[in-house]
Length: 101
Image (cartoon, rainbow, N blue to C red; front, side, top):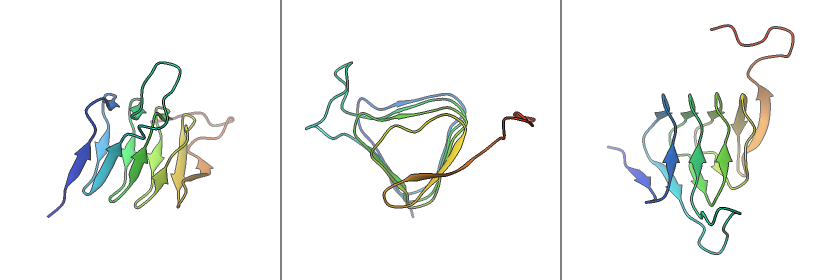
């Protein structure tokens, strides 16, 4: 059994893969310039089991969030994020090879 918690103002882009026990929640003490307190995800994002994404953060498109990772800051596009707190551990595609899907 697994659960999924999605805050009411969370925005999830197209083609996102969200696994079990993931939380998208607000940090109501912190709002961004647009007045948002909950996450915004771009397109083609994979979120691993048990990940927690909190606050008015933006997750760039084509990103992987590892299992049990806690994200509380913006994440650039096309990277792999892992850990507590979440840190970029690798770019998904190098500048030379580009994205070849």
